[in-house]
Image (cartoon, rainbow, N blue to C red; front, side):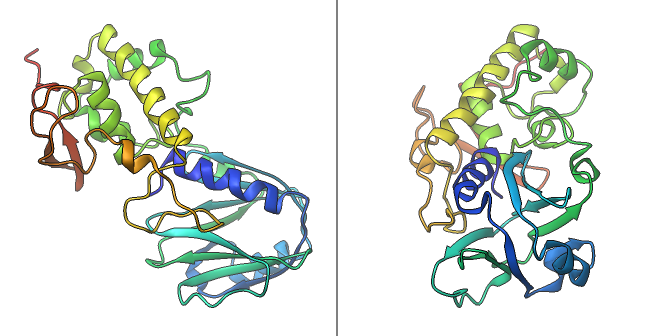
Length: 275
C-alpha cells in the first residue's frame, strides 16, 4: 500500500495537471470506487467544479474544489492515476475517470478494487482521527516519547496505526526501526527517552529519503500519473531483504509476521532488549 512518500509524490505530480482546471465530465466505471455520496450525486456535484488545490493528509490525496467540498482519494493496495491527452485510454482496470476543461483525461486505475473516493463538506469527516503528520512541526521527539510511554503493545504495529502517526506504513516503519536499532517486537512503553528520540529522527529520515527518491516501487502497481516509477526500492536497508546481509553489521536480515504484515529486521543490530 502506498505510504506517505508515495502519496505525497503522486499529489505533487497531479497538482500542476489539475490545479485551476474544471471537471467537464466524470464517469464512475465501478460504483464501489465511490464511498460517499452515491455515484450519481458524486458525478453531479463534481461536474463543473474547479480544482483549487491538491495536497495530502496521511495516506489521502486531498483535492479542494470551488464548490467548497473536498475530494479525498485513498489509493489502498493498487490504486494509481494516469493522465491521457488523447482520449480516456483503454485500461481494463479503470474504475473512475474525469475529463478536464482542457480536454485531458485523468483516469483512476485500480487492479484490486480497494481504492476509494470520498466527496465531503469537511475533510475531517474522514481524516479527523488521524495522528500527527510525521514531517510536521507537531511531530516532535518529546511528543513521541510521551505517547510511547503510555503504550503496552509492540512498537511496529503501533507505528502502523494511522491514529497514532499519519502516513507511516510497513516499509518505512521497518526501515526506521532498523535505523534506530530497535527490535520491532519491543514493547513501546519500554523505550527510553533517548531511544524515542532516536526513533523520531529515524522516522523523519526514512520518510524524507523516500520522498527524495520518488517513493518505493516494489510490485509494479505504484506508478506516477506520467507512468514513471519511484527508485527508493534501490535504497532500502532491510525491507524485503530477508536473507541478505544487514548493511550495518553483515548479519542476515530476518522476516517475521506482525499483525498479518511482514516485518524485516536485523536480529543483531536490533536485538530484543531485556528490560
